[in-house]
Length: 292
Image (cartoon, rainbow, N blue to C red; front, side, top):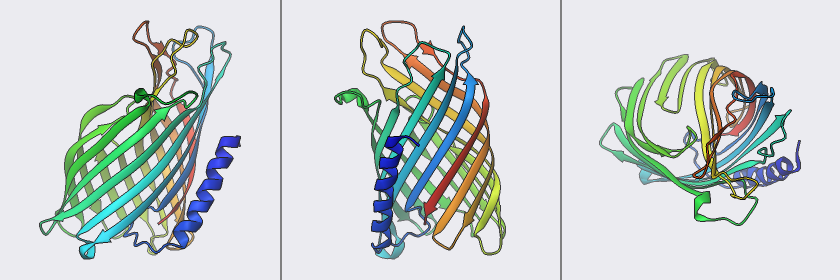
């Protein structure tokens, strides 16, 4: 494990202790979420010399909710850090520097009517290689607004708009969601983010099923004569089985593995042709721990 990972994990342990010693009413929110994913070597689609790349990702997220008016409103302060570490084989290119995504998230959930909630999120982010002084191009100001309506005790739907960089560049998209929860299963669709169908045991500590999830960002580059590119566009879709086990009612372990599709890893430039480092489809494995 590389040194930057160790520093992040040390900070995470400190924040974990802080969370255990701070009285916070979670109401089902993930207070802490740490995950590590590995994508083995895959051939770069347009490489002429058989170059391959592997990618590892580390993600840490902290959420601190505050409940008002007996649950009628919830304010959530969140801080997250994502590290994308590409390694390129059989290539003289140096476009393998680490990519960092640091985000502060402010979410407000407000009850409107008997069965509806308004959910707004503002997410200013630093998305960059962090190898030089920050400029305005290193910042992304993302966010969303949607209405979630409870149909009955089992079903709900949601709709709204999101300004997101999940697909490798900032873009405005509609949000459409639908959720059905039974005695031993849940089916949840939140487009364009994820689709999952899960079953769980009676104690609700073992959850398993299938999931599709898309994630990524646009990362600013320090343009130079040796690297005449403005941004890296990184995105991927993960599809496969997932299982989550709770050691108790607060600490959960998760394993998500399977197939990667629609991978994007492009270097874009305003002065020359873009450089496509997009990878062939392959496999991945992700392990995580969360505190709820």
